[in-house]
Amino acid sequence: MSTDVRPTTPATRADDWAIHTHQDQELVKGLGLTSATMLVMGSMIGSGIFIVSAEISRETSSPALLIGAWLVTGFLTIVGALCYGELAAMMPRAGGQYVYLRESLGPLWGFLYGWTLFLVIQTGTIAAVGVAFGKFLGVFWPAISSSHWLGGFWQVPEWHVGPMVLGNMKVGLNTQNLVAIIVVVVLSIINIFGIKTGALIQNVFTAAKVSALLALIIFGVLLGRNAQALAANFGANFWKNASLGTLHDVGGGVLVSTLTVLAIAQVGSLFSADAWNNVTFTAGEVKNPSRNLPLSLALGTGVVIALYIGCNFIYLSALPLWGSPTGTTLVERGIQYAAEDRVGTATMTQMFGAAGGALMAIAIMISGFGCCNGLILAGARVYYAMAKDGLFFRSVARLHPKYKTPAVSLMVSMVWTCILCVSGSYGQLLDYIIFAVLVFYILTIIGLFVLRRTHPEAERPYKAIGYPVLPAIYIVMALFIDVVLLRYKPQYTWPGLCIVLLGIPVYFLWRSRGKLSATTQSIPQ
Image 1 (tube, rainbow, N blue to C red):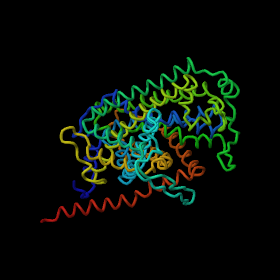
Image 2: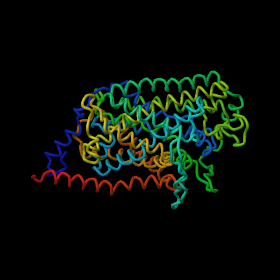
Image 3: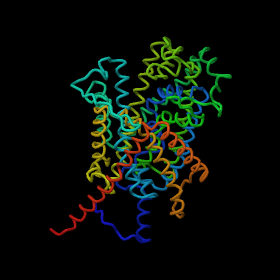
Image 4: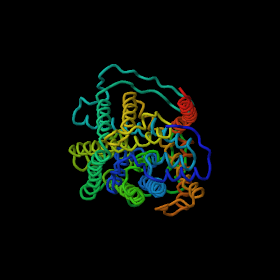
């Protein structure tokens, strides 16, 4: 692929835009509305919904603010999805968000997103979900454990860099991360055999985990209502500590307002609801994309957010929000101090006894397996698109000759994800990413405004509902959350920002490498 720079004229710009607004012809169109919607939901639902409410409860100390945190997440997620629907219908190309940033703000911004996605966001999430799968499989086979090492391990020492705490992790192979590696390898290989094969797995597992969440809500309504929890969490107590004038301790004696603590709480809830944008990565393989991409984004995010909010009401009806870390029963520990933050498991155990814990372990494994499949399937399309632009290894742009899937991209992603599994660093990386994820969401929605101005004549089969008000509100809210996280969670946010900024010299090195390669190829032999 040549990287020679053509003179920019109105004609070439129009030609380029025509290319970027049509689907990739080399890819198989194998995703209908059902599969696209399942990909949205399946990528969103991992293990977070069963865990992060404990941390949110400790931060907010209010039933109303626990629900409020999820409502804020829901608003941001659905508004973001509505905005992305316009971009996806207008530019149904493999790579999705990478393409939108490239076309609206320039190739550097697209590269920085792809760089962060490959290095941390997508692969780190796959590694974490895969290890969680192994962790819950250990409930049934105790030999699968993070302490069961298959060889020596190296304890990375802890060191402090300003507000950042790095290191303090064990590097090596144990039975738990071996399970994660097996899951990643198996799913990566399966996804080579056609988009329809990957979609079939996604549809089956997404249907199973949506059913599991529905069952949790239904059984919670019918069987999970605990008198002690209802008295503690509802009525006048529901609004406890929720007034705008209440000050909340976020550690170290630092007191913040209710709006600020809601922003801090978004770390867990936004992460649990993230990856809804993954369907845009596969846009080149979606049938009737001008209709199915916006619809799948709206339907998928709407259903998942409704399920998430419903689950949190069930948690509040089964367990008191407030608890003690030294409590000896599920009720005494409450949501705040559920064992290992497993609120979902505590709720199911409260309803069904020991069998409830086993059922939740199965639900989380199903959820994790499906989530890994969706992330593996979608992420490979971004690296493929970058390689086509000369901004990643050229071989990554190769398609399987028979199945027309980005086979090399799938393998490269698989190798890096497996390295993260063994390194033990994925946990720290995930702490860092929500800030970076929000930055790229903000930039992409800014890109929506830019494209409305620079390409007013472009065909827009779907236009973002509520434009320009809702996208502007999204940008303001997301910026507020990022500023709050920079101020009050510096140990998480600054490393994420550093990872993004490290991509700038890499971009220019890659560009110069591509130009040198193109020049060398043009010299007569």
